[in-house]
Image (cartoon, rainbow, N blue to C red):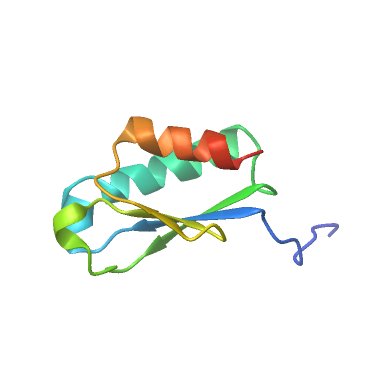
Length: 89
């Protein structure tokens, strides 16, 4: 086992998958981002984590970019892929 369990990604995308964000596409965005990270082998640069409700239900789906502490609201699939691309560097 040569896996490094102590690596720290440069960026974490937190995707809200609370009930309303999920209905508005949050779950789909989460799955798409996770899949893209895996396909493009970006696990060392970016981690995608689903969260519960972020209390921004009317503005969902929500993606928070950390450690930049930048929140994006009403995120589309295109916006999510742009966020991933911009933060994978």
